[in-house]
Amino acid sequence: MTTIRRKSQSQRSLLLVNIGQLLTLRFDSNKSGPRRASDLKELGIIRDGAVLCIGGKIVSVGTTKDALRDPWLKKHCKKVVEIDCAGKVVLPGFVDSHTHPVFVAPRLVDFEKRIEGASYDDIAKAGGGIRSSLEAVRKAPKSALSARVLAVLQDMAAHGTTTVEAKSGYGLTVESELKSLEAIREAASGWPGTVVATLLGAHAVPREFQGCSQKYVEIVCKEMIPQAARRKLAQFVDVFCDQGAFNPEETEQIFTAAEKHGLNVRAHMGQLSETLLWPFLRFHPASFDHMDHVNEDDIPQLAKRDTVATLVPGANYFLGLKEYPNARRLIDAGVPVALATDYNPGTSPTLSMPMAMSLACTHMKMAPAEAVAAATINGAWALRMAERKGSVEPGKDADLAVFAVSDYREIPYWFGANHCSMTVLNGVVGVRD
Ligand code: NIG
Ligand code: FE
Image (cartoon, rainbow, N blue to C red):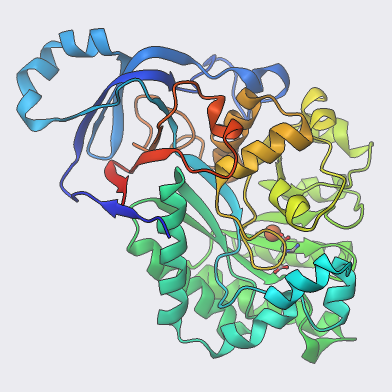
């Protein structure tokens, strides 16, 4: 496994120079909100660029020529570590805004069954799927879960990701969901990047509540959400709202409980079937994720809001689906779109944002420039962190990904290979082993 190695904790002042293409993603300051429609293609590219980072923040962005002439830099050059990017591409670190990293084992039997023709539904009915991951997570010590999550975060950083949303959702008891969130927190404390935790207690109705899902929803609302909020273990509450999971009424109950306890909401929507989305907009969801099935009436509503449609084509690829979310319809109508890996053992065992971008280009007809913006600034919007993440601008966190290519379009082009050579996470440099 490729991991990121922390070069030195103390490397806090950094100057990256000779950047072939610096993708700043900076944009018209009069326009606020996530990037939509044709704005999604605006990458703010600086050729022969330079970035100065001090104390984990970006302090200046421009050309190498200007940076080397800067009087402050000339005076303080001994204190600044200079990194020659030798013509490589630098962009904001990816913001992977949808992942499920707290599980114990891959689901290899389901993988084989699917190859033999079984559907997502067939597999769930035969005892596979989400429910088959529960026992191992319930039994696992927290330290084993956090060690797994940390290894995943390191591997993500090695692929250019610097901010990760991490969901619980494979325990589905109060104890094991809180343990999963604690494992996320523990792993995050050992990783220089940024982690946002989400409680996904409503991922599936566990077997012991089959036929009485309302009782389980009450546990989510009255125990999991209040405890996660009180202990500040999660920033978001997510619900898998779909056939075979939770229905719109249950989703509304869970959103209401989240709102009452001061947590923001997001939801898996439209993966297997269509759910009308506009009734949920009053909860100001940060994102609706998957969006394979979307009602036409929802599109103009979403185009007016900041709720991001997070598309996860890794799941369509891994499930062997012919259809992918209709990204073009959404983008052209002005709906803000993000891309994420949906890293999980059942439908999308990839942690590579470049792979998600490649699938978005080839199967959803997104332009490479749109894929970059969807994987960075709009991912940041999907986590309500755009004031800190997703673009290379003074004042933002020093999160950068360096790719050993000379044109940014090569990032989704060379699918299946990792060309990320260095990542800067909150000012800490990681290089690939
Ligand atoms: O995003 N749809 C629900 N959750 C995951 C699948 C989880 C699993 O199969 O373990 C998803 O695709
Ligand atoms: Fe998911």
